[in-house]
Length: 259
Image 1 (cartoon, rainbow, N blue to C red):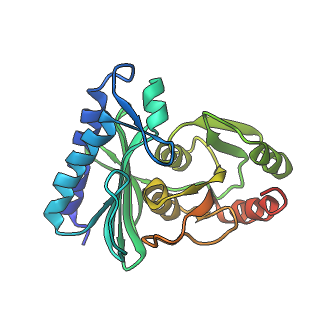
Image 2 (cartoon, rainbow, N blue to C red; image 1 turned 90 degrees about the vertical axis):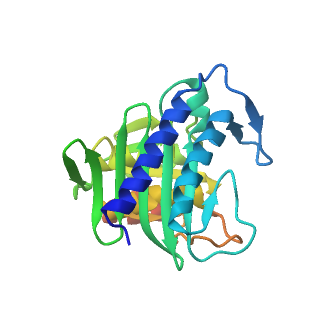
């Protein structure tokens, strides 16, 4: 399904969506607060419109943070038009556009684009993870070594994360906004593991990053070690853990004491 033509359609749409976001000045953009108290801006909505217009060409259902489906789904595009809205408003550049595709509940494709740097990474189930570069694609994989650099939220570091990190023996915290940007930084070698504990993350917050990390060689789960379920409106799973297999298992085991 994910041939060169379809990938080109998705990547072009993501880049255009990123350009639309960058056209807004963080200090001047209109901000509204959604029911879950998260911010949504004109930039989110502009990006959302571009992605939906492009993906509608595929004839597949679209499930977006800014346009949720009204009925249960088992196959759909899952999009987050602006992951890291708070970081966008702060002007850090640590925000991303994320697109994933789920077929019969199985993640088949995911892509993350960081407009501020032009970094674009994607993964196809069973084919690996790649960074799209001029003139080709660079395969990405996590180190098999059990490193100890943990990538965590830029805006807050919770006590339970600090306790888990201390017991694990984390040597360095890498602070960063946006789950999408975190996932790319991890598989590009800037960190060794990724940990969230508190938030119950909806599908659009984790789908693209999940397959990107998994295809790069990470184990990925919620904070309890359970596999993520997609397009199930009854379930929002807590936290996000990604690391090479041995480190992942140890992180989940330690987390049981604190979460």
